[in-house]
Image (cartoon, rainbow, N blue to C red; front, side, top):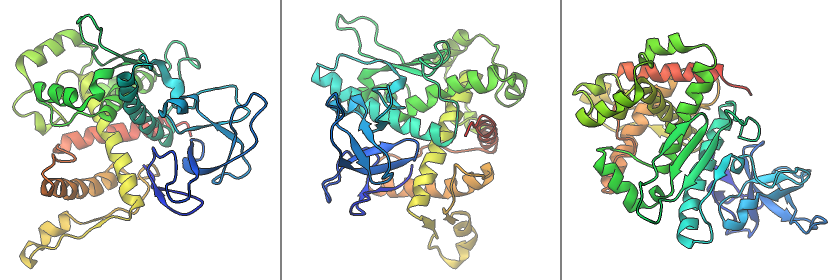
Length: 364
């Protein structure tokens, strides 16, 4: 993620901000420019729609996505577009009843994760058709509330581009309960979205692109029965030596899950490294002279664009010291590790496959 600022006063901004507290300007995100912009009001359109001039693109006229009315989106749409939703929100297929304040608050949190996900996918230049663009394989999200009659809870999953998400997971206590019950070290809304899109892009970039055999050489034979593999995983757990080759225990369940987990970790890495680069982070551990070799391993200068022409080795060389530093800082605050995972050489090789696959699927 980039570091954003207000064009009117240079105040540093978060991606989700809708107003600059220093200059008072309304804010909106320009997806084609990858820029959060201060906005100046223009005369309304004939239908009364509010129009804005973005300071980051002075010649443009834009309006806010329709979901701005719910404080669930700050992305912009060109004034002449027939679309009422922005490039991210057009991937919403089903939303909960937003007249319920609890549903609205939970959905706003899912929306924040959606926008960060789409930012990364766009930065990677990946194919990003929605369901209107491609009714059969476009990417779409159903955010569903659990049935009020106490029926089966909504389960997160993917089916030919349609990703189902449980609204209830936006509640921190419920998500923590599930994380603990499943023995997971990490569980977030954004993590869910990144994982499930891994299944979608496996369809697009592997299955439909004729790369099954090369992918199987890395992740294993995906033709094994998926349902039976999951049942065995939940019954028996991961093998004791899972860290020798996988990014997580769930990745051991089936090659599809190994791919999706590795895909999610790749998105974690590039997005976080972009922010680290934006802050100009440099790691130079202060250790005794006798530990100079260890200090050198933990040193890193993060001054590159992880979305640019770069190798997986360069990414990992920066990522490992960064995660050790951030995990150490989190522990000082009594918080869980930011990245509670260990990357083995085989797991890094799998990340390398995702890296090459992403670059081959780049449409930018």
